[in-house]
Length: 508
Image 1 (cartoon, helix red, strand yellow):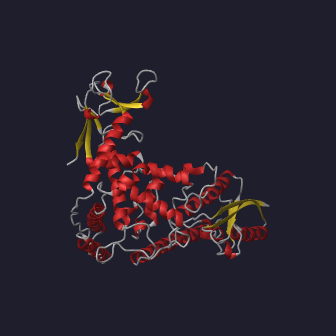
Image 2 (spheres, one colour):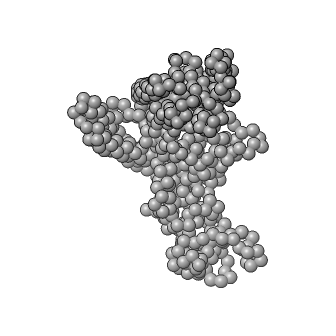
Image 3 (cartoon, helix red, strand yellow):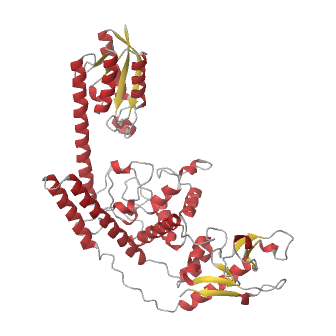
């Protein structure tokens, strides 16, 4: 009796996706093993181990099939002396995998191997040759299928149609109507980000609300699995073009990798160069979405280039990065009083010009008192401006739409000339990459123009009404729109707090 292994595989176990089929998970692979066992028994072989790669594709070179790898090791070490499988395409869909198997049979001609269907016999040179041909043709078939599916998905995207995917955060299971609570929380965050709220703050708030990385479930009370809601996941939800109705398209092959794709760069444009709109309800307007995207990109760029304002990293202190020393103009740092060292230690913290950071060391002032005074001046200035009429400059975000349409047409023409052998692949790629770079640049400019339409204005009753509900970064953002700096002048040792020594330098 020859000990052999039985291999079973299914690319996608549909029972995992739709219980309504009446199938149980693993049922289809179990049927394969039954056929394999019968075939082995008819040949006088004994199945000593089953290798089950259920729900794992064999056509993706980046996907590792753990049981397939173990089977190769067992064949090479002699644990098994052959394999039985339902059909050649269950065992290998890539010529690389077929070659690995054939190598083992060339090294050890005593190994046996048989397919239940298709007549593949790995113990003969003719059988192995046919096995290699079948794997090669399988690879061609897979490539053609991917090309057709990709073309269909692209065409559907250009028509504004959704393709199969898990529901996005903010939408119901039908992926068209808005989810009552998620959509409101998502919209609140989108419109708050341009006003100074950070992505990190949004993440903390969403964790407190019970959201996790997958939008299908909310956290049960006491479940500590919220760490899975990463900063990048929250950021991706905020800048998703779907929020304002824009259709995106990114082939599956381009989605690979650990880094999340920046979906605002993958908006689909129609023949007129305008973004294609989907057939689902929207969370926000294109202008609000663009303002959020522009703000997130500005912050990422500032972090990458090191241009983030000095001493402006604190979420605890309102004037950090705004208050400056009236003697040397160095940014003041917030630090805590030591209890019992000052009559002001009951206020908790102060703003000081610290010599160990590069300042003169000549200014110290009570933090909360300075902040209250500056906020009072800020409110007074806002109330004055409420009656003023602000002229908004006209913004034409469509000015590049004609060129965007031309670029799409030019790319199609280049591809046509390449297919007709009138251009080499190398030349065509050079031209296409240059056009794609130009298109991406114009698309980013379109987003910036849209964002400029909804830049928050301080001269609004909303600021006065909602001030207490703002986070420190949101308050600081609004202060910076009106205040360039707060200069704190020396008062002399032991003197009481004097508001006259706080000078506000207003922005132009």
